[in-house]
Amino acid sequence: MVKEGRAYRAYHAKEAWKNLAKAYFDEAKWFHEGYIPSMEEYMRVATASAGHTTLTTMSLLGMGDIVTKESFEWLLNDPKILRASNTIGRLMDDIVSSKFEKERGHVASAVDCYRKQYGVSDDQEIIDAFNKQIVDSWKDINEEFLRPTSVPMPILVLVLNLTRVADLLYKKDDGFTHVGKVMKDSVASYFIDPAPL
Image 1: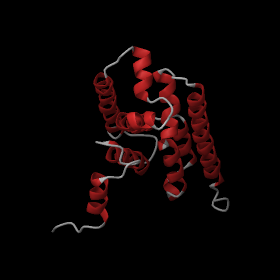
Image 2: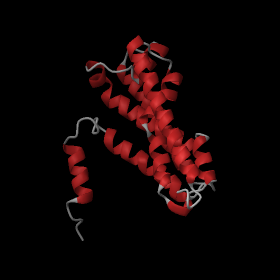
Image 3: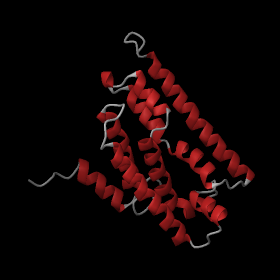
């Protein structure tokens, strides 16, 4: 990267890892203190630990000439599409995994934070509120594709595809932690079973 004048990419990768580590540290601190943050504070930290920003940054490292310093600067400015992607991944994960994670001793989830902040006891009401946020976040992602942007389309598609993975993993169950039939069938349909002609 140095020979090609792309050393700035390594700097951004290092910063992404630092931000991810800080988010994990914050969550660990909350867990050990039994702290339940506000939804705003939770989403700021938990979306960083969801990893979409880090994965996007790491993916940009190898995308060739299409990626510029401006692409990384765009990413650092927390663009709407990335916020939406992080929100979708975090809320979908918390909807399907919060009960299991609570049983195994995990940091407060978005469900816990929402319940505390808004005094809502009905889990379904919380899930409905999160599903509305998820739908709105998908609209934000779609909107980013409808107008000229400061970054090339392949970078937007990268963020979209990361969001699609989160949607696949957490649509009905926690397919990341508990790989089941739906996930196995999905992988098989993409990579093993031939497509009928």
